[in-house]
Length: 569
Image (cartoon, rainbow, N blue to C red; front, side, top):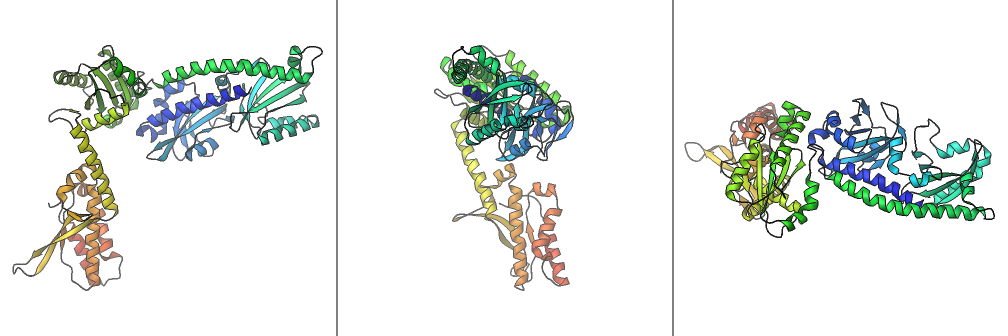
């Protein structure tokens, strides 16, 4: 019986592992659209026998398998997953269909924060079958309770009381001592056995904890079952012990065999991609060492559909899924023995090919691109080096290659030099972000003189990066900042410090002069009102100024907006 309680924990853990894997692979558009998750997850729902499988937004909004809108915010399993923990409910009535179910829930984490909750419900009879109590059911009915007595697993919907203690207490004082003894055992975490009488039945209830969880397995064994095993002269207590030994012995061998088969089945299922029905990245991650032993001269191609988001907006999620599925099987049909294609994530494929050469590569890329002309494919190529078996590192290499395409081509080929440049670029991007946070980007005022060459009539604010003991010009950072979008942060940092300087001049009684600031076109395209409001704030809108001074501040703010373009270098 104790081994069977371990099985309960194992079976529930397997479902949790499945849901965690699905949650990790959910695309952003599904996370942000709970209604779309119904269609996206339909294959997984069927494969893993869930009644409903869907995404719930942070406010609890979700949809069941029939499209009914439900709000799960008041459910304990949702609240637990929202706090970053996995959860499995006791038997509850589903929100819309009002049928008894058990509900699994896992957090969907992005950028170290919970972005949504993935939940799957199973009807009580299906959940009961998952537990596979065959070896125990020959002795009597099997239940799973929590420590409060609430029913977690039952054979079917009986519409009866779902708390064991409440039910037994309703049978009268005859069972009072047995109920108390059982509660004390559970409170102490001890397995045990107690005798009960109700409804004309005389039964023993055996109970044991669920492998360190809050669950308790309960087996109802009628006295006639025990008597059938007993010899006439044997003491009943020895018969009970014998029954338990048989249960444990049979259960151990059955569980060991079943767990081994289930582990293999689960591994095979986890390597199936839900969108294409083919292989996914888990397959390559697991089998890459074996593949590398059998063959040499391999190349790994990383293909990404760059316009997949636009395709979803135009075609809809279902049509895009169909297009990705068709692309996968077209590529698969071209594979030779020992070659593999996998769908890594939404719109990303990896293709493991042999016999790499420059001529073969050009022909192969053109052939792959022609399979889906409506898709804009970008490809990274990594000729696999001898001894390399780390799949995740290979994926980093093909990403670097894809981000650095050859001139006039839609693919790039990995080199160590490209990888070193990528590391340097990543470090520079990190340094720029830190520089923005620390206000290290400051204006460098270049004065403008009147015709007499002495009177300052204005100035141009040039961006400079005060990095450690160096002062860097935009030459060192503008290209990357434009590419990453950090240029807007730098613009606002410089602009803020220019406006602060205006306010300082005013406080010192110095008459300000017009300052021109070169802002990026990205900021200009976004909005002119944001920098105007920023200037108004820092240049004196919220300070006590005279009417004349306020007008001067507005004029200064207007001057700051006259010059849009790029940084002066």
